[in-house]
Image (cartoon, rainbow, N blue to C red; front, top):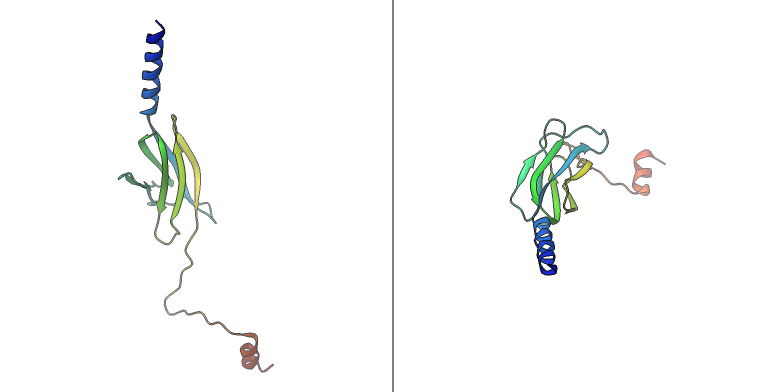
Length: 124
């Protein structure tokens, strides 16, 4: 009888480890809080990629338990890598804030002047 209980316990623990649950979240602009549509969301090491919907939401379904790195990419935004641990329950990451890249507009350039050079320009 004792051996039966141990075997059942082992089978149950193996079954829990092989569970698959979703990872959910929402991608938003860090400044405005606006939803970001069309951001690429993937787990490194797993060949599965999805895009955020019109509300910035995503769901990676049926992710096996384990430790992963979530990668989020969108044009004009800095890529974001987040470590996540998928346990034996659905994982909701909430709002994930993305920072915009600093753009260089066409034809614009940045000039760096020392204080002495600046004084020469202003006649001081």
